[in-house]
Image 1 (cartoon, rainbow, N blue to C red):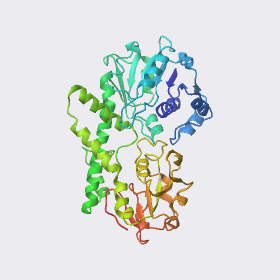
Image 2 (cartoon, rainbow, N blue to C red):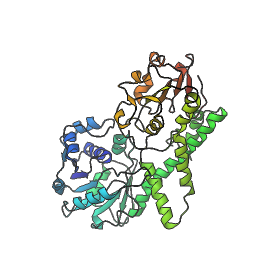
Image 3 (tube, rainbow, N blue to C red):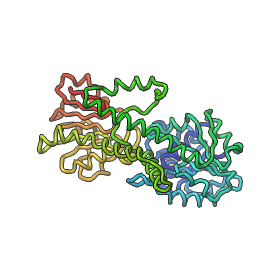
Length: 419
């Protein structure tokens, strides 16, 4: 079989590589010829661990094109671009709708069309395409772990016109090579299943954020509580229980917005959704509140180092990044910024530097906003080059035991640790 992927952004390229790794010939199409040129040079436009290596490893099975007619040879074509969202979490579906219209005109009569990118409930059924050849597949990739998630999915959730009918042989053959459960359901159920998954994640995140703040006030330590929760079978060892700085990345925000819009249309209750959004907005300013309290209110000319601009480690994405929000609130102060992947040129009026060591030198406060692995290895000599002694490390990247005797004031989420 020949499997096509239309859209070579984050979702498409990682899904394509995983399919090639499973032994299939694949073709990646994108309307942007510059993206195709980079991919042919084995230089993907997105940052993911293992991605360049797997493209090179499977180069004989992978081809890239900006000519949509090349999809005619495919048995299955996935619609796989990332769907952009605005600052309110609303999806812009105009690009995917246009892409689908163009792809449909280029398919052979027996080809199966699968919508892989996230769309709101009701989208797939409204498409003008033979329903026995039209499917929706839920994607559950995670920025920074996309290759792993694409290669080893927990299950496939497949939306179809009639879930009682067996999947067509080409699609079933492809999915079965991943050796995981395949759940068939109606289009609308599959589209809502994706949202349901993300709602459970948001609920866990909100619990962690709310109670970790209580820990900070009463002298408890959230990291001591988490193991007890993971051992509870009703919660589980893989729950999202790490406190953070609000919801970011765009995907969870999109699902919250989608359900709010459905609520307005159908008159359902979504008070808990509004509460989650409010909690996320509040938590995003955790670092800024501490900076004002511990530094800005005490020093007239502070210098602040911010390490990390991506919204999480192992990705180039800055969508709704708490770090960008923080830096945007510090325009009246001197701020030195470093991220190993994201260029500081995306932010005006900051001092971009080429290393963490350069960023830290001579500052009054160090803030680690993205838990990149390289930040864990900051030498004590680097930290001692600071002018001040305030370290705000939300995700506890640094080893607190190394800071105990050096006079640092160290603040992290979920505990009132003060060195």
